Amino acid sequence: MPPPASRRQFLRRFASLAACGSVSGGGAFGYGNLVERHWIQTVARDITLPALPAMMDGFRIVQLSDLHLEPWTKAEHIAEAVVLANALKPDLMVITGDFLTNSSKPAGRLAEVLAPLEARYGVLGCIGNHDLWHQPDVLQRLLKERKIDLLRNEGMTLQTERGTIFIAGLESAWSGRADARAALRDWTTDLPLVILAHEPDQVDRVAQTGVPALQLSGHTHGGQVCVPLPWPLALHLPAGGKKYRHGHHRVGSVQLYVNRGIGCVGAPVRIACPPEVTVITLRSPAVLA
Image (tube, rainbow, N blue to C red; front, side, top):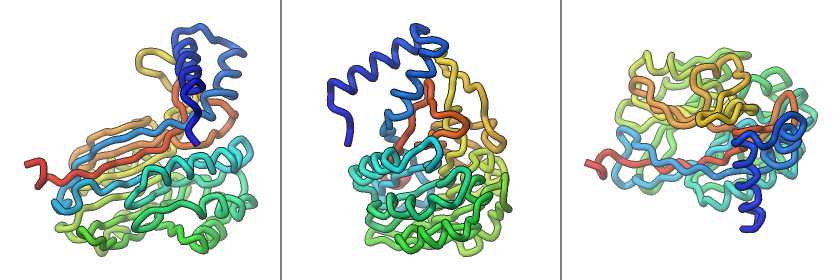
């Protein structure tokens, strides 16, 4: 449930104070721990997707990423993100990896928390580096029981009442073997293409193929802890997420959107990069022409 207006106003004012340097040292950690990491933002973007039929103009994809259930991120926080995501009434829901952090033990609980996710044409995901380190087959099975399918170097043709779109999912390039050729085996150039890839830097290899696509990624947490300059500077970015920290990018023939994620790794704190639920509205070139 979104915070009441008075609380939202307080959070914005608190964030502004932090950005101006009024909160420092332990105070900054307290802000990042008690306030910002719980302040889930909804970010909306319109993205024009090549080959999208005019009838599919306005197709809505809601993206979640980097849930990282336990130890720092609790089920209640992820449940709040689920409520926000459902409220956006998506045509398709996607989750771009790192469901868990240090163990597969919470996988059953996570599957229960994610079970209420609703989208007209289903819920899909790709797998992240943390997931592959901890019994990924267990996670995949439990999610599938809740009708959440992980695409691991595979793709699927999604047929809707308004047209057809192809969704491909890559494995983590860090801890797995990302194989775009396998994922795109059944894709044809007349189909609009969306690629789910946990690490955003995979976009460079995808763009080298020349395919016109939208890649949705996470992994970076937006930096998680950033120096609040006019353009926040991340103190650390992980392997596979060095080039594209967050937001919308164009890399050759590929458009990339990097979601800041929901959870935390390393410490229960976020500064100058709050958690994010993204709603992407696809636009058809035929309509815009």
